[in-house]
Image 1 (cartoon, rainbow, N blue to C red):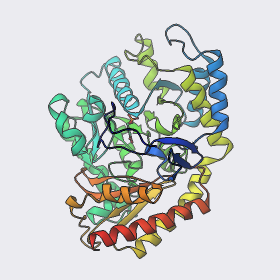
Image 2 (cartoon, helix red, strand yellow; image 1 turned 60 degrees about the vertical axis):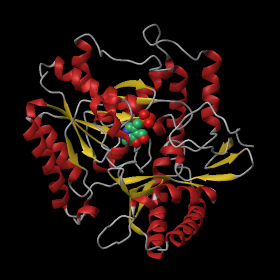
Image 3 (cartoon, rainbow, N blue to C red; image 1 turned 30 degrees about the vertical axis):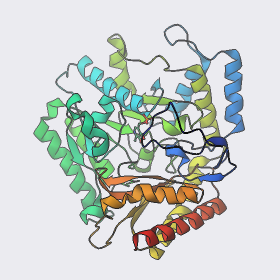
Length: 445
Ligand SMILES: Cc1ncc(COP(=O)(O)O)c(C=O)c1O
């Protein structure tokens, strides 16, 4: 059964989709009984898979007691326990947690916390948040101002505060060797140059996704980049904010994406895999040195009604339990290696794949019409959309966007739930192979 022709909902793209009936593990079924393999965890959300009984039981236990207690009126065990647990999983000193309900809220909150910290310590000239182009940090006006993805930002430019950008370190497109530390330094130097040209005393923070998400398609930074940007931020008194909304909660094989480089940011934004599709949940985890002055000055002038919601917190805590109990970071790392082999094997067989990249279970391939020149497929082909439809028709859900400012350079993200097994990844391979054959034939490649 599908919904009728008239719907009161309006989302991007419109058009009717199959009606979801059930979801278990890595699979989902529509009301016509068709099965889909969730090869993208929705939008890189369902890290522990669908229908996890332990999470559902924890939610039920909380629901039977109470589902809401407003944070200025009550403390709750659930939000307290989740905050302590989360802080324990983050780098040393990240003792303070502020809950929100999604990724955009987490990024907004992280930037506002940084700003209030600067004002509190007498550095109120600092307000600029430097981010990368391309990048995606959320859809609210503050988070959008630090996003660089033309189709999403263009209509809203007059309504936003312009923020400085530095190029994302896309070594593969710039013809640089990602394994050469000089490449990392080359991109980090551009951050240093922008901080200097903006006036170091005016720059509040540098915000980045440790491994790129939707806008760059699982971009892994080149050697030396992460350490160099951290050093540059420290040298200029610029706060480092890591957007771990997509990369957090074990997605890339470590609890945080930044853990691959032992990063020590000032503020971390998380969401997606933290609620894992069970509840809307996000968090800002900040170093004590940032939060203490703000608390002493009277507290953070910020907050959402649903922040610290006990039901969301109980679910989040159970999600973290499952990530640990099932060693999902370890599984993401192990299965990630297998996925890399699969994708590079597909690249050997399919000329239209020009690049394969990613870490753990956040990986992508990018279509190109010429591997040598890195020329994208013609934009009018809308490969990102068409390939998605073909895969969907075969029962495989993938996630796609465009790498070059959202305008061209189609990439397909493969990011299944972290519980996935090797035979299930092989199932993805078969469907991807078939989808690639169909698509190549269609475009005459
Ligand atoms: C890195 C990153 N930051 C922020 C966001 C915004 O999160 P949300 O859609 O939950 O507001 C996203 C969403 O895709 C994201 O990938």
